[in-house]
Length: 404
Image: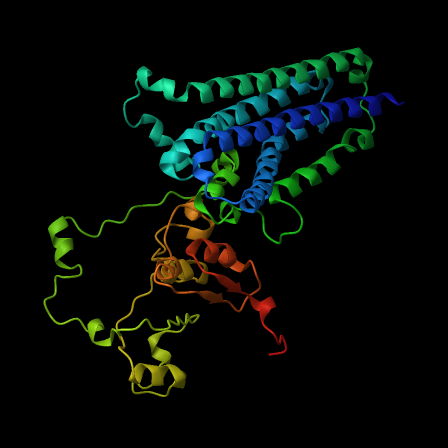
């Protein structure tokens, strides 16, 4: 076997060991999370648990690929002999420095998620400075703490031993450092591994878009369990912080303008029916009031809507809570206006608990369906409709005659 090829195989073995140890820790953490919070899943079926687990494995692989990306590049890129001797130490050090804090957060989330109902993000790290921590309260979490310390110690020891083994093997091939091997042998392991890691980061090759927190299981507790704290934290690092708007300086001033402040007769009560009525919500893209004819006394582009307006309680003063489709659907159907710098459905808040209009109506015996003209998965509407409480989601693929 050529010396340069032997070196490449040593690097490949180190990559497999670092990756295997880290991935095993993710699986241990997921199992411990499930056991610790088993009371939250008492109402879940086996089918739902397995579905959430399958989704969770995708999140684990994505976080694993994120953490292994830089160490893998350090293992395989050409380096001068002096630095090549230390490549394993540097690669292992980078992995420990980046992964250890995230893994610790994952173990903390096993308990913290009971209170926050969401995975930890840069925006929620402030929770560590809140409240008063007392040692007497610590015994409630002693078993989780012991398991976490053992698991983290084994992971850390495994990484260090792997790095030392790689360095020892390379010292045995000491003569190889003093001659630059052909470029082919230096890069032969890097390109395929980079492809594997990129596929892992994306969450697979069967999806057109990279995996996001919104792709988790629709039920709150199983959805949070399926998510991976390192994955959510990494994804959230590039997210802009949500700025809380301030509209009123005086609480009394705000209350004067809310429901009940006006003593006039409610217009809505006149349209209230004794028996439940069917509800149809039409959400039109880019349709402003100026396109409606009769209400503006101009040529109409919306004859059907004009007929509805003539027989309905019609509000001529309407203001948009969003200016994009991906923001508009949550605004209309779940009272979630576009307050953040990025859409709710792609933000770290996408997995937060909320009650959509369909979920509210289902308590009164309603069944609901969502019809959308784009393909399934567009703008994550399929995931949103599940979480909002829709019974059925119809996309473009479900329409019976594509020729239309």
